[in-house]
Length: 300
Image (cartoon, rainbow, N blue to C red; front, side, top):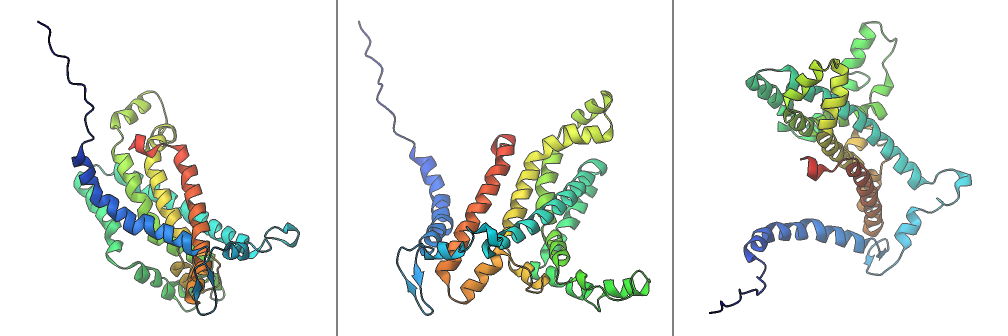
């Protein structure tokens, strides 16, 4: 008696996982993909002083890079603005990474009590209970010519007169950014450090490694995912910022975000959209380079 062959009909794809992912996919389409596509489409439109012209034109991109091909006359306005933005971004990234790593290292390896560690971590997050604008503006009365810092410097005899470079300068912009965004590095780095097996540190010490050798060869490699994630947060936030640069820089420091804001205020939406598309491409390029250094999905 021969047995019937097994049923080898292909099974259909399960519907339940697709239904579970549908709400998130819909949200991403409506609030992420569609706005990006709309921005890219508007960047190809024409415009006048009073209206938008739905047309396909390269005018906005041509005007953006006008004169940039003639390097004999120096860098064009667009390249100078991007270099200024990248320079500020690099300085902010360096300081936020340094401070965020130091704070995380202290909390993770020098505080033995879990209760105290979490209490200090909450203290670090306390400033986020107030608005970014309020925390940024709070520097103005401190750094101004008649501010607390200048009064202290003059009264102590360190300087003869108030220092103008403390406010409305690159220094004040970087200081405000570091104050606002250091926590974006501290949180992922602290999370990575807390996942490090303490037996690895003990093994390094037993092998004769010094504190700096343990830090360089054990802690930092295992903390790379947190460093990359925090760096991405900082770069994305700084590259598109125009409020902090405008207020702390006294409207004197050029940035891509500021150009986009000015163009939108003059209703030049296609030109602003073209700037946004180029900025998005640059940010994605930087993120791609950083993620090439380490596979975040594999490490997390």
